[in-house]
Image 1 (tube, helix red, strand yellow):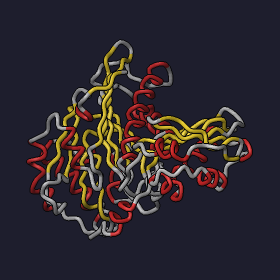
Image 2 (tube, rainbow, N blue to C red):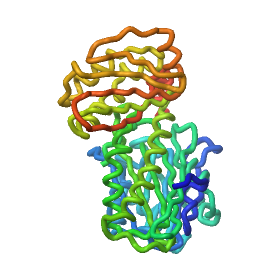
Image 3 (cartoon, one colour):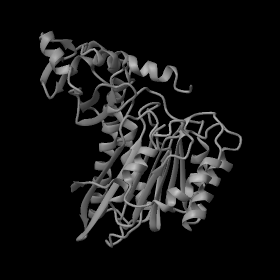
Image 4 (tube, rainbow, N blue to C red):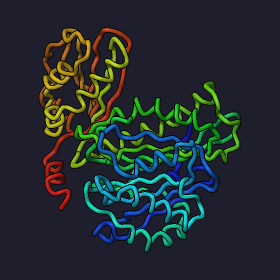
Length: 403
């Protein structure tokens, strides 16, 4: 597998674009994105488990019910959530895509991100959809920029790999740095691939990988109303279609996981106000589920996140988060270490503290990527979760987000 440039436009047959249409007040920020395939694609999606769901999710569920789609349209600056005419607006966005591309409206995935409860008008999108469609090309970066809200950088990735002797490609863009605690089951990820795979196997792969990737990310513990991950597979690589579990399916799973893991790290590192990426790696659990529960509990702890912002090796907050996680753990067996580019430091052995240099700890924890290594010493289960530190800037951003 090889990392390449191109994002969602790297696979054969995909084009994208992003423009400013006027939903966002800042004219320098793009706010409308479009991704299209030359041919109809197998489609798979996972959505937020929040009971309050954005209207675009309800429309997308209907459009991909048959397992196929050909385009994705997304606006930023307005979530189109809790609006009486929300579904009508979402369907209208799909109709605009149909009018300017010839793709059937029911083959369009629609998404929105931004402020909840603010009316959304079709007018600015209608005025600029022609410009957006006419500019379709190898513009993954522009599309990635157009779906950003409080993100500070666009997020995209692509890999090539081989299936049955055919060179295949998978690419993705994503956004989401606040209200991030996916339970997939304002984070959006759009994946494109030229692999030939059945809708059923594509959905199986996505649903399985999300459990170990996006469901293991937390910025602030809040699950958005608009979370969605969508994969489109157009089959133009010409591989023998993947229709059952086997070697090719496993290879595709590895490629999909690589793309999703990369975006997990990007989303966590760019968390609202964040200065550090936190990666919690748990091993030695009685089961994988226990390891996942522990890792997610630690990465979500506000007290621990604040300690990491201050480069404070307060390992007691790690133990505290493990203790209230509700997992079957023998706390007297727990070991904890911190690691970064500056080195590694053991801070807890068998549930008790060990002597360490505060100066060395400060040096290690002052890096922008910190790994928290937790060994439960009770089995072979392991898991990884991603998050970020909690800073003054997070409070400032969310104190006036709507205004």
